[in-house]
Length: 170
Image 1 (cartoon, helix red, strand yellow):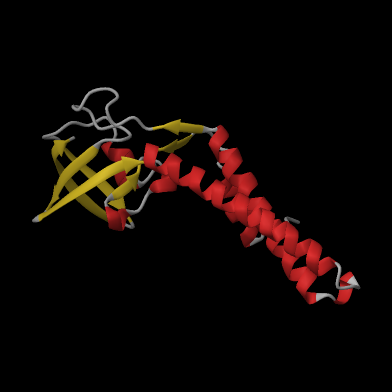
Image 2: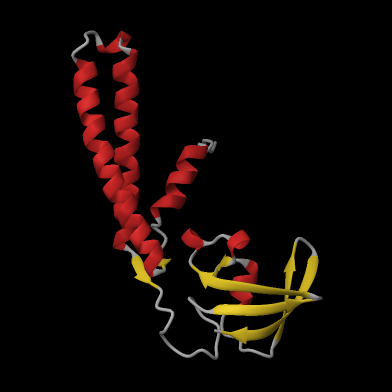
């Protein structure tokens, strides 16, 4: 019999980035460094809070201590995940390679029916389609990699076939 996987375990496994390289832009790398600095400051305060509330008495009935300890563990866990992610970082250089073929870091202008769409191809950690950033692992992103301006591609998602014409690669 297989034991069910907890939702939190799934999230932690996805955040760890143990599956290989973590593709980030320079801005994404700076963001992780800023998060780490912020977490280190919060960690120091959480340690002080845990020590202070631990002095209140019996640990089993000390709600403040339990909450402080939980916050300390949460911060430490997040710091560990970010540090592990940094070990596998590959920085996406937008000026690397040619501007002919679509690759990580490329900005692509597409036409679908009457709509013109612009997307930047990034790693999954920075993907945000509402802000024009799609992952190279997404259905559209994976189909775009390697193509050039002027080509037409079709992507099948949820039973629908969407046809895109690549107008420009930056």
